[in-house]
Image 1 (cartoon, helix red, strand yellow):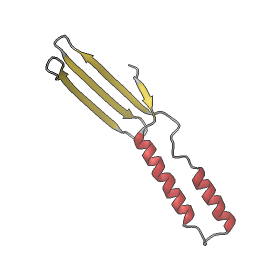
Image 2 (image 1 turned 120 degrees about the vertical axis):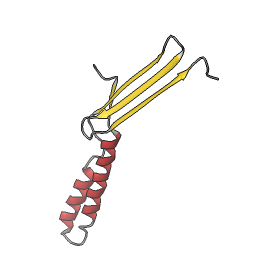
Image 3 (image 1 turned 180 degrees about the horizontal axis):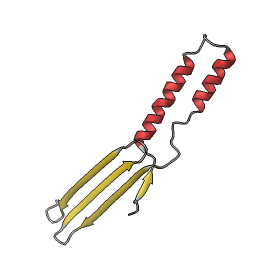
Image 4 (image 1 turned 180 degrees about the vertical axis):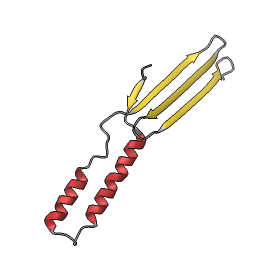
Length: 99
């Protein structure tokens, strides 16, 4: 069964953003402790670290339909093969009773 869609995983993105911030903070903490050249290299390297994942590892699957009795069904699932994020949502509503 193929996925309905693939996206960048929000959990992976948040983890990469946090890693980038830690890397920049570590480089900034070197100020005055290493040569100016080493400090500049560390800052440039840290700031070059991308916080934007370039691979869409979040698989999205969904179903939307109304059955013969007038019940609307929605089901959504997202899962990431890299970080293990797993999210599911299901709901139903009778369209004949909707206001």
